[in-house]
Image 1: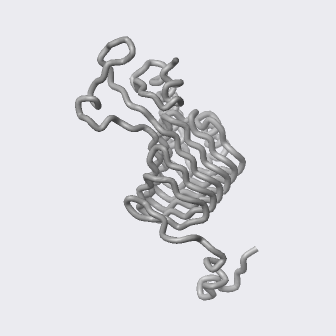
Image 2: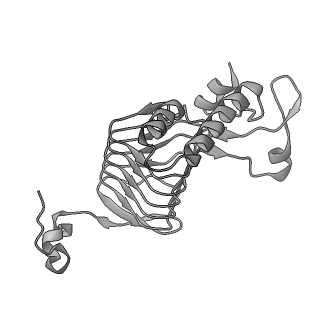
Image 3: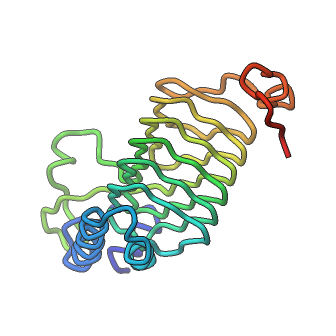
Amino acid sequence: MTEEEKIFAGQLFCPGNPTLKAIKLRSHNLCAKYNRLFEDEVEERAALLEQIVGSLGKGCFMQGPIFFHYGTHTAIGDAFFGNYNLTIQDDAKVTIGDNCNFGPNVTIVTPIHPMLPQERLLMRNEEGKPTRLCYAKPVKVGSDVWLGANVVICGGVTIGDGCVIGAGSVVTKDIPPMTFAAGNPCRVIRQITEKDSMIYKPEVLGANAPL
């Protein structure tokens, strides 16, 4: 089993493995190129995103700067918007649905390190060699999800379709669909219902109307 296969199997792996380091270096360098481009260099930015992300839908926009660890381990659906400082540490797979909006400084982290200090430092690999090891759990964000500014999603979490996650939340457990959740640790506050429609906020709605 390769080190990358170990990641996907949820097993301990060596992040310093040369093959993994090459994947990460490629992503880091491509992200650095993206971050040096101006916002109106649309074609160049789009071409780089296609190289960085494993799967990218139509009509996506990332403000930048962006930081993808592996890049190829992430799949993003259509009409994605990522605001400033999007960070996705995608050791394990990260899947993001359609029509998602991420506020500034959103971070998704999939790797998990051992709790004991001595195990964090070194463990014996299958060959008996002392090695720095960690493991990772995938993250799934459904469609039509809005993540507020400074949200952190930890490994192993699934966020259901239609959710809103409040600013500054640290999401450590699954969030069911169509709920508003917030806090550290993040917890469900309430269901999102038709009563949340903008028609009930006429002072904000003005002359506009829902479709």
